[in-house]
Image 1 (cartoon, rainbow, N blue to C red):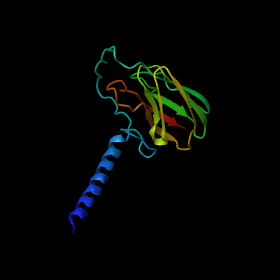
Image 2 (cartoon, one colour):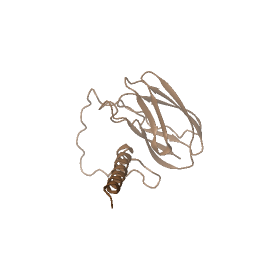
Image 3 (tube, helix red, strand yellow):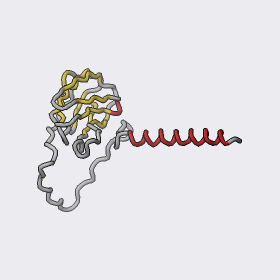
Image 4 (tube, rainbow, N blue to C red):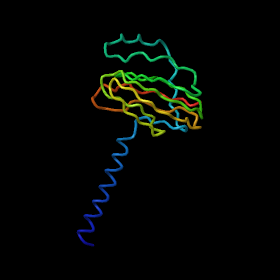
Length: 162
């Protein structure tokens, strides 16, 4: 075999390896599917340690879960280190996410399993019209940006389709 054949073969192998590594690196961490739900937290045993005192950089509290939306507008506010903990929707519903970015950096509203990705600049708002698929379960959502470091920490939640 010729040296050219081996260079082409090595080049193709390296290209496939790089593509594979990029696919792994770009996939959202902890992505759920209907067949692999998030594990339930372990039951507490004994006495729990005292909670840590709040810090100035702690994320803002997220409101409690609302009943599942069967249609209409769902308001979502993004802030640095703050994202809705849970959004509930009914399967088959026609919803409009009205997303405002109250942070000082660009944020995204992402539902990776449904290929929804919208970047919203600081002080701006966006609307995403969506017909909820008939896939009941829990799905990851969030702002999965990583730059600048720390600004997007804790910006994850769960979309529940009932």
